[in-house]
Image (cartoon, rainbow, N blue to C red; front, side):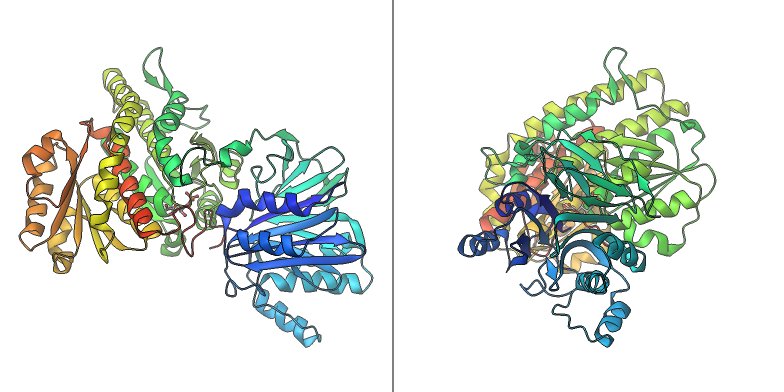
Length: 607
Ligand code: F6R
């Protein structure tokens, strides 16, 4: 959440700053702002709402200058108004902040008791006043930052400019990512390499606790103890083109259609075609000794974890706990020796998941992560990094990252089963065959895009929608409901089909569409029975199944969606497609903002 960019440049920076914000708008989009240094003054422009409003503001009221900072916000403290938009400033200092300053209340009281007037309701503004007070008392920018950082509790990435020091840009990170970019006589700061992609590919990822002083041609990095440190400069490989929609109307649509390719890409690094085996990265611990798996994640990544629980238990016969990260630590989980803690995250930065990871690490667990950003905090803190190769995911609703998470988790479960002697060579080859069928099956599922678009009008008027599934289709039902609610704002819930009769069936009437995920197979008959219970009460069914299933139970449904017949192992991957497309087309039919739904942000870096 919140995107930060800073440029110490040799040419005017405002347009480039705003352009950088465009590539980070997925991180937050309820207000935006820019501050440049020009002729001894801080020039600040801010606007409520989407970035387009800031673009308009800056075009009518330019922000000249060769050095500046900018921000796109996802509100935590204070409403999304122009007054709460970043940069926050005093007469001497301006800054942008991503994260949460947990002790901002006592700091705010201290500042107001000191006679200072704060203009916003944000936690961030206290930081600019604390730094400014030091500067006003004669401290250098470096001294001021060094004094203030240890006083802050919580998470932050900061970019700070100083009116009296027009050649210096200071950045700091604790808990929220920040990168330094190296240009030709110019230096950059950004929340991620993507933000800087057209400016430079030469990147340094700041480490936890680091802060950096940039001039146009130098970067001095200090660690949390203020000791100068060297951090490697790497080539980022981030491409600005990855943040473009191409011929698609929305990023989400583009990302749904990328799934066959990115799943194939991901599988390619987990499967050795030569002997049809599952091949994982170098593992420095004994996978066969793992006696319990604790899976922790949020949102869609959590549902991937729920699906994986079936695979780990079925293949490797290892007991699995799955928790949402925001609850995990608070239930004081029992973490026994020999346990593997597995964290799933597209961004690798989700604050709750990261906090859970650190909790497990402290408890002596082995840490594995399935992440889509290999430079993320989770990736760096793991014992075993299992990257998904989905490429940048920009649409706020996760789609292609989820499919790749499932692919990696299936491979890991099979590999663990082999190591534990629970899966024979022939069975492993079987798993590999089925996984390799996934890209073609995803393509076949995508072929039904037009049919799904054509039935969106049946769901769009609904106030409530229920999704039902059994076995691994149960988490898929919850994933379907999450997709629908987050982008179309229709209330939706996913239930285990068999649970319907224990309460939720009371909700059923002809106005509540019930979407049933039921591939033909061993669980089909039971799910269909649950579906009949719904139908008997006037419920309108949308059945998603294969030809065989639809033939058996499709009659009398409000609509049906035909999926290819696939092995149960890859059914969750394939059935993700219709629920994603349905949510997408319903949102389009309702005219909501598909890629930037209200109140959400792509990467939630606060707890
Ligand atoms: C839903 C969605 C979110 C994320 C959740 C975790 O479509 O995108 O529920 O899955 O915020 O994010 P990551 O995977 O980055 O940890």
